[in-house]
Length: 447
Picture (tube, helix red, strand yellow):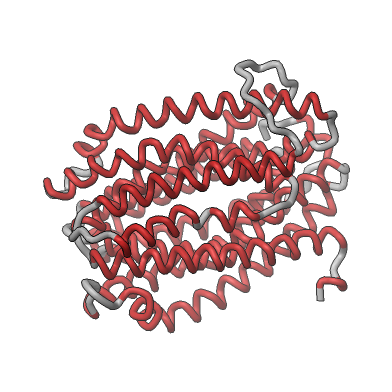
């Protein structure tokens, strides 16, 4: 089947198949971890605290990694054509400033957490707040480790190596082992130590693999002498505006759920993790494989070919997402029961989570379709357009959450997300249909 595709289509397809395999294995580990958490804790204050802390503590580092991945991978693809000394200098400076930013972010997360709890966690009870404060002992250093992991993953993806996708499951695997082997009762200790050790192992392992892929064991340099910095900083600054706006979607959902009453965060969290499984295997596999290929095509000066490829893949992904959403809607109660309904997780909890999951499936076709178009615009360096669309996305979500959640409950939060991705897909499709000459995209990093 792959032999009938063009060479660039084959690169995306073969990369997507590897990513999908790694994602399936990784998501299986994540699913077992969620089963273990559900078995031990059910829908309880511990899970509320864990979900709340994980979402809010991760939002800034994940946002920064998302921004850097989009703008860094095209730079690293072009860097492969330069000599070893230039590559070592840039990678060393990148590593040094990532480490510095990570340490500062970890300190900021820990110091600011009482303010976070007083604002976003005002709907949580005192027991849940206390557990959240305890969990920051793991999630503050995890913020630093997330940045280091993201840089290593981008280095691997620039070489079209996608093993980082498999290693995304390392924290979940360690948490799974810690939760199942712990002898304590309903306490946050297993989640805390599993998170801290898991993120550390993942970061060290990926750094070793990235250094092998580059053939460079770059030691940190604190400076901005590499010639790639002006382009990278300019592009990252523009992208960060949109990414920060989109990053508030998760905390906004947590804030909305926290004000819906007890256990709403836990219910939303279980459904969201099942949605992320479908999104990851179905869409992220193609998206992660596409960016380095599209960036390479654009670097060759064949932007029209890359645009045509991306549109074909996008329409195919919309159709695949629609089929996945329909099947998921029919199987939602059975799937939730299979994964979670044991121990402290009851049949009533299954019905609640399945109802939220069904409304979350609305986003699948649009998310599937938009992700490949995101990679197209990134390969064309059209970061200003991407930032504007991200701001519009957050505006849609910001308006719809308080309108739908009071009426529909947690289901309304998921429906608002589906509408947000539908509007995002329309915007990206209209922008992608407009042909942009290669000279324009290479000359204007800001667009």
